Every structure is written in C-alpha cells, then in structure tokens.
Length: 275
Ligand SMILES: [Mg+2]
Image 1 (cartoon, rainbow, N blue to C red):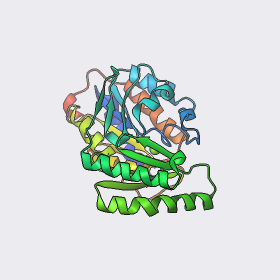
Image 2: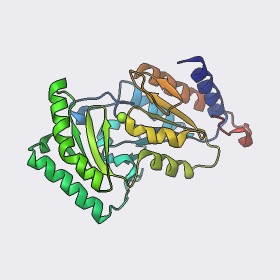
Image 3: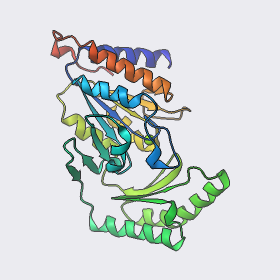
Image 4: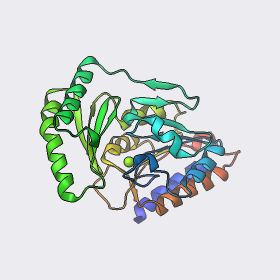
C-alpha cells in the first residue's frame, strides 16, 4: 500500500473506531473468495467467514454482500451466521436477512433482448458455458486455455455485440468471462440505495475486484472508502489497492479491531468520513 493509501486507511479506521454504526459492503468472487471453476465450491478464503461473522456480531457494522451472482447461490457458501444481507445480480435482487427477496422488474424489451442472446448461444451450441440469471446471461471461460477462451469469446461476441447495440442490454467483460445484462441496475445503484438507508456520515466501505465493481467504487468516492482487491493492479476508481487474501484479511481484521474498540462516549458529530 502506498503512503497516501495507508494514511487514508488509517484515518478511516480511526473514524470507524469512534462510530456507533458502520457499513461494510463486499463483492464475493475474487474479493473474499477465490475463483473456482466449480462455482458452487467457491467458499471464502480461510478465516474470512469467521472474521465477517465476528464483525457482524459486534452489532456495529452492517455487512452487505453485493455480487453479480444470484444471491441464493451465496447462501450455502458464506458460512456467516447470522447471514448478512446479500444483493445479487449486480443489484437487481436483494435477499434480506429475513429471507424475503426484492427483485427489480424487467421491462418486456429487456426480456426479449435476453431471449435473443440466449437463442444465439443455443444456435452456437454454447449454452453449457453459460450461466442464466434474472436480467443477465454470463458466459464463463475460466479453466480453458488462452486460445480456446479467445475463440469462445469471439463466437459469443459475434452474436451478442449486435444485440447489445440495438437494445438496452449492456455487454461487460469480467475476469474469466463476459456478461450481457439489463442496464436497469448496477452495483453503483446498490451502493447508493444501501448508503441512503444509513444515517448521514456513517463510515462506509466497498471492497471489490472486478470491472463490474467500478460502478460501486465510483458511487463510494467522496462518501467512503473504496478498495480494489486484486493480485495485479489495474486502472480503477478505487482509492486503495490491496492483494487477496492476506492484505484483505488484514484490513478486515483491523475493521473488527476498530469496532471492538468503539468508544461509547464518542461524539456522533465527529463521525463524518473525510475521504
Ligand atoms: Mg468479483
């Protein structure tokens, strides 16, 4: 971490230690869990579930997972009790702590465009590479060699590019695949909604790794800490870059420590995040 990021983080943690409430938003795959070809085996990095559970149990941090996956897929993987709120499908879906689900409705044009994107995959006999979700289709090439991945990408784009061009759908590449999805929501919308539910000045952070997390970083800037969790640096709107899993674990451990050191007599008016 460079000196500027380090001082930003230290100042944030100081604010956190004086706050009665805070907000921790985390992407899942690549951020708190390693990528796995078999996605239903992508459990969090060792120690992360317990650490998040301890943060939840302090009662001082609202923990929210914001993922591109269907939120229900993450329930058996997270192993955090009580289970935090999970926002799935890049913010289209909200799985509340009581098990209820809020799902943003899709307009008929979006449904039709997604059906066209699915038809292309069927025509190309590529449906086995795809993950079909509400509001999006993702094709994965993790585990394939570079040439095979490039060939698959080319075949998908051949059909999907014209669809994205003439409809409301949005094409987005991520680490290990490509997704075509409704423009109706992104992780930035999720961050803005969640933050609007917290009292003004609540210390808040978002941790993410992928290009789909950039909307969330942008939504955080000026209002909290944005953290890129990635082995290799890339251009990003995030303020801080750390590597998984150890640096991410260390920062979350400091978060827990800051919450545990909360000072009851602290002055609420001094809780603004100046980042
Ligand atoms: Mg990710």
